[in-house]
Image (cartoon, rainbow, N blue to C red):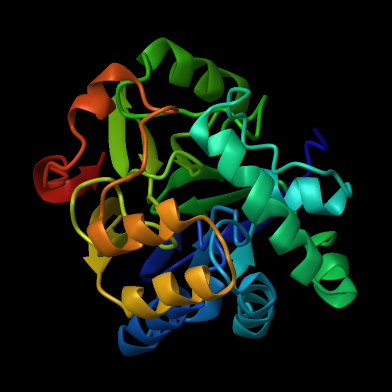
Length: 284
């Protein structure tokens, strides 16, 4: 782990946070349209990593993110590409369905990433730190110690608390797990914006992102979802002989399997996702 932290100072105005583009150009283009409609500038937009993954257009997504000019950290897939590794580094257990699928989509993605995009990935930090609404915020992918660690809503707070203790921050913005959530204790907030490249296993084809707002010194947050041309994304996966199971997920909103999920999230598969935020959504 490089422990490369980019400090971007104090941010003001609305923020948009998202993760897991997963080579899904149609979702990415729709999110850019949403940001423009909300008049959120690129300087106030943060990606939690994994621009590249399952879908069919990794290079186009990398170029689009570069042209957009937003803040972005490396996910485990980007780190694997930078290091010229032969697997995605997603921390899948050997011979599980996710592991077997990754042996298809990762070589495809690796073959499509240009030298120019790979050079750009090497400029990205592993972590971002900034101040917002008088809160110290830290952006990571899985965890500080392990970029590929899966941390969910049901993950014990003691696991999350170790991150806060080590980093000495108020808010952690994470990615990797694929399902949006928030968890808080003792005035500290762990927030995961979810991903835009795949649905959240909730039976809906829409995908998720997170917005911050500074309300007179109080950090307010809200989870939002949007629809995009998921049928085109699924067809492109099939046209490029990528895992049909993931194309099916795009069409149904249901993951092929729950191999990476704790029991709580496994039992929530197919259930509509309602994220109840704190009173007035304020981080006090």
